[in-house]
Image 1: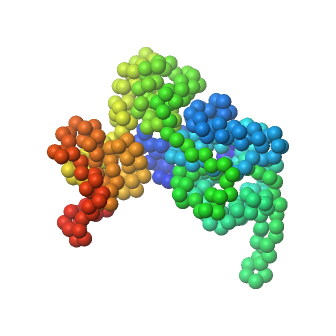
Image 2: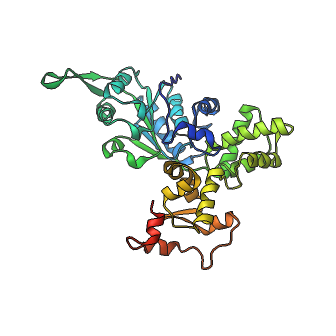
Length: 374
C-alpha cells in the first residue's frame, strides 16, 4: 500500500498550539512522522473503538466478496482517536493505494478533479477535515461519489462547455471533528458513518503497551496505568506522554518507566492526575479565584489567562466540560463543585447554583451582565 502525503494536515487550531501543550489533541508535523511508525496496519491490530471496527470489518469484507469498492466512509469524532489510522487500514485491508489530502488544501474544484482523475480502480481517497472543503469542490464531489464522473468546465461565460470525465470507481474516506458543519447533501452520500468515542483507561493501556514495544520502552503495568489515567481518553496524547516519560526515565532514572517515574515526569511537564495542564488549571483558577466561580464570558476569561478566546474555547473547554469541571450557561462559564474541590478550595455555601444560572438570565443592562459578557 502506498500512501503519498500530498497535503498539509491542518487542524482547527494552529499547529503551534499543539506543540506547546503536552495534552493537546492536535498533532504537529514532526509528531505525525512518529505517529506513522506507531500506526496499526490492520483492523486486528487496531485497539479500541470496538463497534466502529466491527461494523467497518463487515463493510469491507462484504465489498471484497462482491469484488466492488465499499461504500464511502465518514469517520467523525474528536482529534487523536484514530480516524487517519482507520483510513489507512481501509486501504490496507482492500489492498489498494491511499491518496491523502485535507479539506483546506482543496481550494478549487479543478484541484479535486485532477486528484480524482489520477485515482486507480478501487483506490481510497482520504480527505481529512472534510467539513472545511471549498464549496465548489464539494459540489463536484457529489457527482464523483454517486456516478464516478466529474464535469470539467472549459471556457468562461456563454461559451463555457462542460466536458464529462469518467473516473475509476473509488472509495472516499472523510474525517471530521465537526460533523455538524457538514452539509446535508454531502453527509447523505456516505454509506457508512462511524462515530469515534473516547478511550477507556484499560484500552489506553493496551495502546501504550503496543507503542512501548515498538519504541523499545521498558514500561511497567503501573507506569502504563499512570500515563493512561492522564491521557484524556485520547491515544495520541497517551503516545505523546509516553515519549516524554521515556525521555525522563532515560535521563533522570534507569530507563524503566514505573509509576513513580511516570508521576515525576508528568509533574515536570505540568500534567496533573486528571490530565489538566498549565493552561487548563489557569482557566479554572481564574474562574474560581478571580471571579468567584462565575458566570463569566469566554472573552473575559481569555484576558484573565492571557490567551486568545479561540484558544480557551477550542483547546481548554472541551475537556474541562467533559471532565465535569466547567459548565457553559447562557450567562457564561461556571465552575462546578468538582472544580472547586480539584483546586483545593472550599465549595461556596449552598453549592453551585447551576440550575439558577441556566434558567434565570440577567436582566438586560445589569451590572453583572456588563462585567462578564463574552
